[in-house]
Image (cartoon, rainbow, N blue to C red; front, side, top):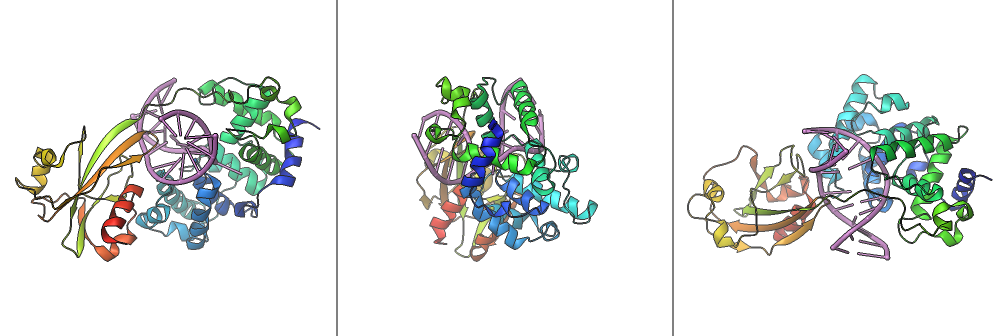
Length: 348
DNA sequence: AATCCGGGGGG
DNA sequence: CCCCCAGGATT
């Protein structure tokens, strides 16, 4: 038996029972694939179930409001996935009359669908012969063939895609793709791969040359920026002043609070004399409470977040600000760190 | 080609 | 602390 045939045999015995594997409905598969981008199966699973329950068809999804989608997406991260899903659902409703495309050529045109996702939906829903290359496949191929080209270089990506294209089983591409990914996720793991029980280890270059920890090769990690978010809690006990974020920075179109960003961590008494703060609250800002600074880690940023409670209403309201009744706070899509702060303050 | 976009889990 | 996760869009 050859390499890929062995992996399929391994898959048939060892596969997990995942809900999106029991359907060929392109909409359902699309839902799962977007949710699972850069996301572990265990983390995405509850979101998949909630989305499918709330939006059983793409027509239901297309009728949603963006605030509602982002709320449902809350906590999962990479929120552009949710925003792009709504755009795509509406386009599918309008231009495809609610019938989700199944062909790679149509899928690749849609927002939020790249090479991997188009190949995944096309193969799983219609058995189109398209090889998926995700993080698992990169790792399996790099190790088995001993490929040291970086998986995040342009030439590396093309090389791995080409190899995957050459390997794919034309009789059953869906099964082949599932097997490649599941094998990478369950056995040929990033750390401590289970080489001892691997059915293809004798043909694996990484195993026979003791190079599993060195493969795959990935180019430099980007440096992390530190940012300092000083939030202001303005509340009269009934409402809270909230801010709807713009579409440029992190957490696009989600809700947080009025905030002044500083280049370093300032003590409260230095913070309140900043021009940016005075422009909002006037010359005198009374600090009622100051929460401990919390560190919040993102992929490219380290956030230092604090919240200062004041009783004085702002002298000048930003156009993106609105007073929200406290009982309505659970309806807003909040970034994780804001959700935690709000929850602690109002015991929600 | 580089950079940005979250949050969680494992070692 | 560092790396990775069923990646994609933007510049």
